[in-house]
Amino acid sequence: MHAHHAHRTEPSPAPSPKRAAAFYDVDGTLVSTNVVHAFGYYAANRGRIVESAVRTAAIVAGIPLFWAADQMSRALFNELFYKQYKGISRDRLVALSEELFEKVLKPAIYPGAMDMVQRCRETGARQVIVTGAIDHTILPLARYFGMDDVIANRLEFIDDIATGRVIKPLIAGATKAAAVRDYCADNDLDLGQCWGFCDSYADYSMLAVVGRPTAVNPDFRLKSFARSHDWPVVDLR
Image: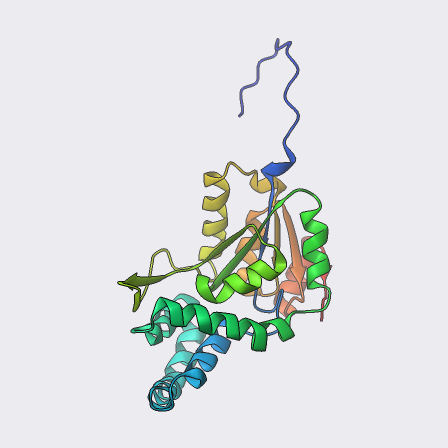
C-alpha cells in the first residue's frame, strides 16, 4: 500500500488495529523452564517401565552429544532431539503434553507473565507464541494464555506415528525472525507495528525484526544490547 497520489481527495482509510501481532518466545520469557528439555525428561519418565528405561538410557547416553550440539547450533540440537520421538503416537504425545503443562509448565509460569500478555492483548494485537518446542507440547500453554496462534516445530506423522523428523522449516534461534516475517506477510500484518518479547541474546534477531521489541528477563548480552538500542526491559522473575 505505497501509492502516493498528491491529488487524492477521498479520505484515506483509518489503519486497522488488527494489523499488529505480539510475538512471544517461551523459555525464559513466559516460563522459567526449558520446554524442550523438560518434555524430553518428562516423556522419558512417563513411559511403561521397560520403554522408559530404554528411552532414558538413550537420552542419557545422548546428553554429551546434545550438550555439544546445543553449544554449536540450536537447529542441530533440535534435530537430534526430535529423533527421540520416533515411534510415539499422536495421542500419546497429546496426553503427555497435557500432563507436562499441569505438572511442569504451569507451575513454572512467571508471575506477571499473564498481566504482560493481557496488557498487550488489550491493544487489539494478535497474540502469537514463537518457539522451538513441538506444537503439541506448547498448545496447552497457548490455550492457558489465550494465544491466537502458535509458531512451533511440527513433527512429521505417518499414520499418526511420529517418524522422528521435523517438518521444515525448523524453528530455532535465527530462523524465528524469518518465521515472524513470513507470518506477517501471510496474515497482512505490519511488522513495524508488531511487538516482540524474548529473554535471550540468541533470539535478538526476532526482536530486531519487529517495530516494538521488549527484552524480558534478559540475559547479560541481551540486556546491554537492549540498553544501547533503547528497547524496554521487563523483569518478571
